Length: 454
Ligand code: NAI
Image (cartoon, rainbow, N blue to C red; front, side, top):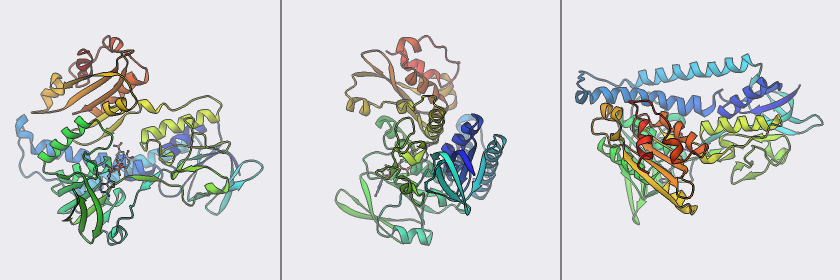
């Protein structure tokens, strides 16, 4: 059977790409080896947000007396949280399935492998059959990076060491959890398990948590979490795991810590193995499928979108990349502008950023000025956050007065940041934003407060 497009991988890049292509009239086949919705829906974004929401309600009630709310016999029932998470995932995955069906995408739930080039297109085998695609979209995503730290493999086999995949399914909250890696996954999981009553320790190699996040925000987040009882060991590199003990080096000294469970969250790597990319000569660079900003690989009519290209490893980037690929397949020129992709850490408080940080702007030699305001300038924030210490920071280039970066920590940041992304994307200037009307009272007004300080 010949298709206009064969999509390999059914995560955000794959399912959205297939849907857009099919709606534009391309006869589309989607091949998925594990589950539709990919990591995002099944073992990433959605499950964690479901769990974090339960933790937020629980924490809110636990500390409700500041707001005049008291409750007795409060309990976070982890089993029920997991059951609800499974229900939400099932519902959303079935939504993706019916969406694909409604636009006539053929779905094969089996591993797909590129076999080679035929006269009419590229041959892909799946479920014992061979299909031909005039075009290919590689959207196979990423998987947890398992480092060559001695004892990791054995720990995984024994079920002591977990990745994001296993930790989202554990039926019982462990007494103690050591998280290796203070990045996005580590922090979101630290947040949930801390709320659920587990003793959480984060071991991070760098001198700060939250990776490339603005340093001030990362410090505020750490302070908030230390207050909640999470222990952070910074400048600490894990070197060995032996059963329940994690050995790490800090300041030239070897230390160790024991925990019931260990979460390995030191990053992710693209899934390219067993795909047959070599059979058609797709170029791989540092373990990622190499593409340009239009999603094209080095092979004509073969595109790649999502984590597999290693650019940004975020579901929302994947959506946009898939759309760009499909538009270019249809000869509508399009490209991804990576500079204005927002990022969020769904901790409590939430952290959200877009554009340049002070550090990245300095590295690029951009002459900028900044305005930092406390979230307490927002009436809504004060109303809802007793002793909240959130901030909003706006960076502007001195030459044109354009907004080049916005960084926020505090409630609703995840929902507000898209407005800031729009400002960065549209290269809005301070004087343009000054004319915008923000709804009152909302926390979003904090951007206006920061802007009026320029
Ligand atoms: P990450 O790259 O965000 O963080 C990994 C951390 O591990 C780094 O800070 C690194 O310094 C540290 N590390 C590495 N080796 C270490 C060692 N031996 N000892 C101690 N620390 C060590 O990776 P993470 O958290 O696994 O997330 C993977 C991907 O998933 C990211 O690309 C992220 O963007 C994505 N993701 C996004 C989410 C969101 O947008 N909210 C949520 C979850 C994941």
